Length: 138
Image (cartoon, rainbow, N blue to C red):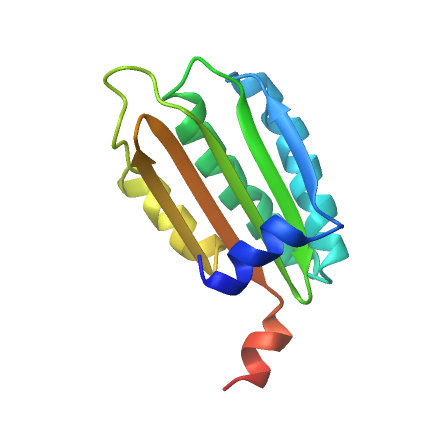
């Protein structure tokens, strides 16, 4: 995640924070909040669905690595949407990375993503921009 995205997550007054138990039955709630943030960033229907899928994949990875609540922060920053999630790792789950299929899904649905495990805490971030921003920059 670039420094601008990190600052947007920390300083945005439109930031939405959510804590969910580490159970897949709460992924629907996470996807709804992700879709809301993506709509506020101006993403189109396909981009919103891509973002929801990317957030789902990363959230599920953390959910299978922790016994603690997962803290999520969502922000619409101009024409992009950013989410960061984190939770303490379960013993033995440190350093988990997306599997081969998940990595392919994330590469297809997110503009950028990152997964890290440091000091017993697993963290992920994902960024999705509107296509018109990507096209305008070419």
